[in-house]
Length: 123
Image 1 (spheres, rainbow, N blue to C red):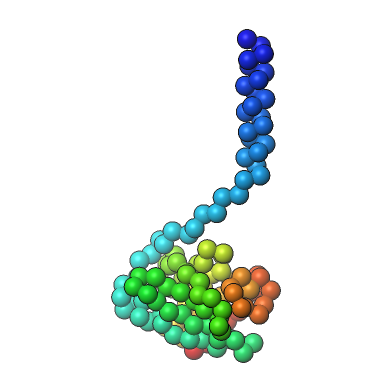
Image 2 (image 1 turned 30 degrees about the vertical axis):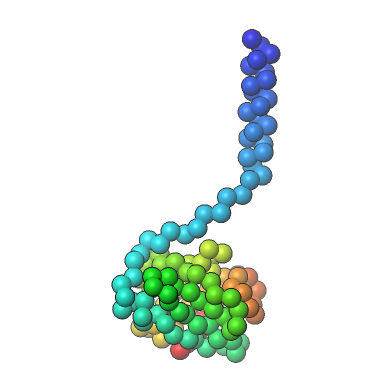
């Protein structure tokens, strides 16, 4: 009986040690649903101070951002004027969508900035 308990304890310990090495990616779930007018209002381009362009597009109910000719990245609404990508880039639209603040800008494809850079872009 002691051998069985020791074997079970060893198995559980090994399983827990291995579980610490596992990484799970959780996609942000949209916590805000945009209506058609709100989606339409997002379709615009913004000029960055470093000369790059950031463009927002929609396809049905999905929202994408693209920096210059980089690949499009889907972003998810978390509030009326706030969005987030799977990689952790955060967008906050301000001034009736005339300005967008972007946290972790460097995580976007083709972004010319450090990963955790915060940028402000204007239409």
